[in-house]
Length: 464
Image (cartoon, rainbow, N blue to C red; front, side, top):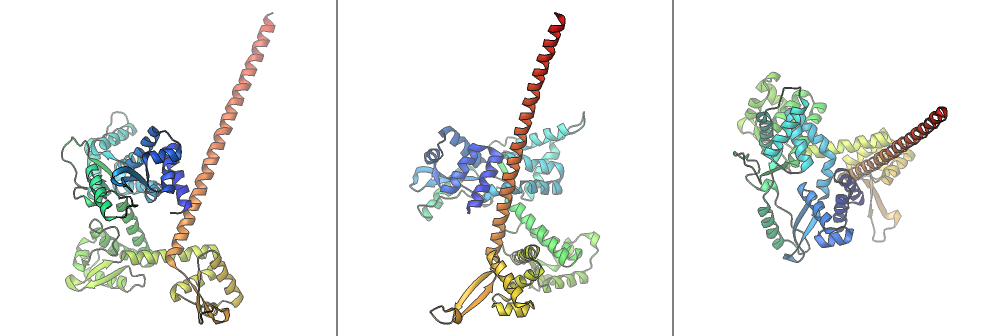
C-alpha cells in the first residue's frame, strides 16, 4: 500500500462519508491494526464519534475486526481494507452493469445496497419499489413482485450474497488467531465460505438476514467482457460469441482466482450456442481449432472426449491483454519506434543496446535516447551481469529487460495519482464556485438594502 493509495482512500472516504470517517480510515491505513482507545487517542476524537465511524466502515466492509496482539482476552483491534475502499471508484460501473443486465430495477437494487453497505431483502424491495413508484406517472405503482424477481435473479447469478453471521465471524477470527502470528489481525470469514450465502429466505420476516454486493462476481464479469472484446477485435464476432458461450456456461461455478474455466466438451458448447448464429458443428470445430492455435492463447484443448474438451485460459488471456495495454501506453507517450523497442524487449526478454539497434533497425543514437527515456520512466529495467567479481564496466554485460508485472503496477499507481489530482482539483473548483456564489449573493443583498434605504429616504423627503 503506497502513500498515493492512502491519500486516494482518504479522499474517497471524505466524499462519501464525511471528514470524521475519513480521519478514522486514514489513521487505520497508516498505523495498521488499532484498538478503540488507541484510535481515539491518535486522532484526538471523542470516543462516541470513533464508535460511529467504525460502525460505518464495518457496515460497508471497509474495516475488519478481531482479537488483537494480546489474544482473545485482549481488546478488539480494527484494520482498514485499502482494496475495499478503492472499490468505490467502480461504483458507477457496478450500477451500470446491473442496469444493462437487469434493467432499472436491478440498477436501483445495486445502488441502494452500495449506498448502505448491507440491507435486508424486505427493506431493499420496499425502498426500490417506492423510488420506482415516485418516478412513474400518477396512478401507476411498481409491484413488489417485480422487484423481488430482480433481486432473486441478482442472487441466483451471485451478484448479491448474504452477509456472514456475526457469530461465525467471531469464530473464524478466533480460529485464525491460533494459527497466525501474534502480531497479525485475523480476517473475518469470507461470505463465499458459507453454504447459505446465495439462498433466498422463503419467509417475510427476514430480520437479521442481510445482503451485500459480491464485488468478486462483478470483477469476474468485467474480466469476461474484456476477454470477449479482445477475441472480437482479434478474430471476428463469431469467435467472440463462442468464447462468450464458454464463459457463460462456467461463470457461476468458476472460482474468482482460477487460472482457467472448467473444461467443456464441444457438444456442450454446440448445444449452448445461440440459434441466431446458425453455426453448424463442423464450423464450430474449425473455430475452436482457430482459437486454440491463436498466439493470444485464449482457448486451450485439454482432452478428446465429447468431441474435444476446451477451457478458456483466464490468466494467460489477461496477461496478454495487459501486455497489449502496456505496448499501447508506450506508443501513445513515446511514439511508434519506442513501442517497437518495448515490444522487442518483451519478446526477447534480455538484449544489449547493440542488439536492440540491430533487431529494431533503428540508428544507434536514436535507440540509445529511446532506451534511456524508457529507463528514466521505469518502463524498462537495466540488468548488470559481470564477467568478473570486480564489476568492471569493460567486463560487464548491460542487458535491457521489461518486467511486466512491476510495470503494470507502475501504470496503476499513475492512474491512482491522476485520479487523486483530478479529485482534488474538482473539490477546489467546487469550493471556489461556492465562495464566489456566496459573495455574489451577499453583495446583491447589500446593494438591495442600500437601494431600499435610498428609496425610503426619497419617499420621506417628498412627503415632507
